[in-house]
Length: 359
Image (cartoon, rainbow, N blue to C red):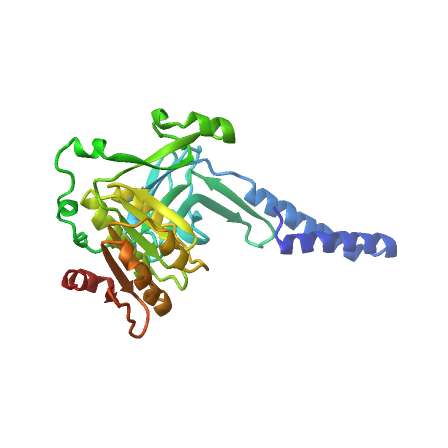
């Protein structure tokens, strides 16, 4: 396609032709012809399409924030002649990474790798590889895409924590036998069906009334639930890391876990720490406080509030009677007071295990 300079050359050549014919001067016509010949040569320069096969690997596909991840490109020349001096760009989220491809003989394969940025959480699209070919005069430019795109999920960092004591001995020990959970499963709420749900839990009467397939959501009443409330206003990576650490610790011990923010639920599981990390990887800043989320949270078990707002840290004391244990991880500045609540002031994630175990 023509660049802005190419379009300008085309427009200028057309104007020179018109002026030359109208005024009867040959010089403008000669200049216009030169401009058109330059455009034709530029189009011929960028017309060939390199035949490349690009296979991409992202290792690993899921990585804790700040740890290493690498993109590996396997590029094969399928054309009938060798290629050299190719410069490509690989998309990484909203940015691009320049990739210098070594000389590719006919049928040859080259492998190029480069590190991926992992300092910010999120689902980061990687690729496709774009090959930019431009003529020396900058009149034309062709961009072609090769290979499939991949995705890198940057998840929160976590610190190894113990499950907070609930004050009930049988909760710490969990179920007394393998049959205990099945005998204590109770109905919690109705929700829309998602792929993978057990069809035996479909509530047909509600499905017929609403026109949407509804299933019964069951909970295990024999185990205490750990509710993690994350305040996403003025959200920091430290706050998400602390929330992920508390949630994964409970899930790793086999206890039900619920993670919510002021904007709604994030994840709910019995023991799937991977699910919790995947969902928390996508949590972004919000505008709603967590007072209502704490008020509506189902009581029992432990409540862990992670916030940078001293007012929210103070309000958590109002719900402490509904839970066996209430912990506030405070990542803001200054001191807070919450009677009856274990307050953990946190400045860095590495200090969390020591502070957590000391309270």
